[in-house]
Length: 220
Image 1 (cartoon, rainbow, N blue to C red):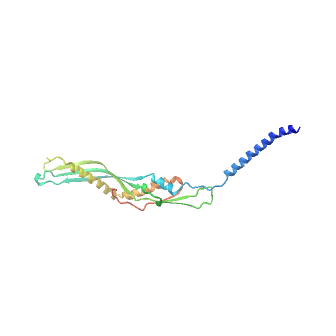
Image 2: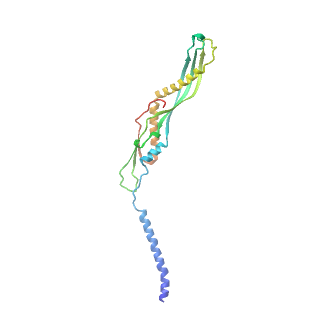
Image 3: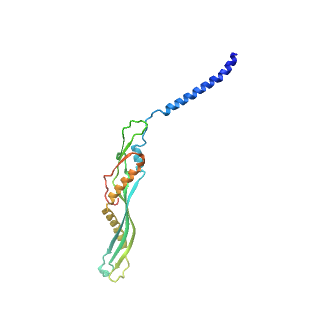
């Protein structure tokens, strides 16, 4: 009779122990899930610098200019001034300006966090970025057309290619000059501020962009 009781009691004991083991596991799982661990912000100064540098040269302004160019060549006495030439050209060009974000360093970025009382919520980040000075990246001459070209008194001398070459050089200079008059460097700086600020808009951080350095309006 004792042997039979032991035979029936063993499965019951095993079942009870199994249930207890399951309950212990569930209790541990519940404790771990509800343990208040401090939330960590994913924003760091190094991360901000890396994200900005990925944008590299940020072309923020493409300034279009139409201008009229004159180019001339003085005649010589031994050719009776018949080699004198004068050209009038209409040129169209563009100036690309922006900010070279590859120049951003860790010294140009500051990240701070507001005090947080709830450890389950990541602290609110405040990012301050000091942008490099704006600069002119490229000056393009998209088109140049001859409006008038005069050669000597009787027009018997062939057009000198040097006149066109001079006109193209002068046109680029004039395109850049007019873009500078249009305050292209300030436009480039302001547009860069907006684009960099938009880069971190989805992070929920408060972003302050400083762009106090407006570069010289000249081709690097």
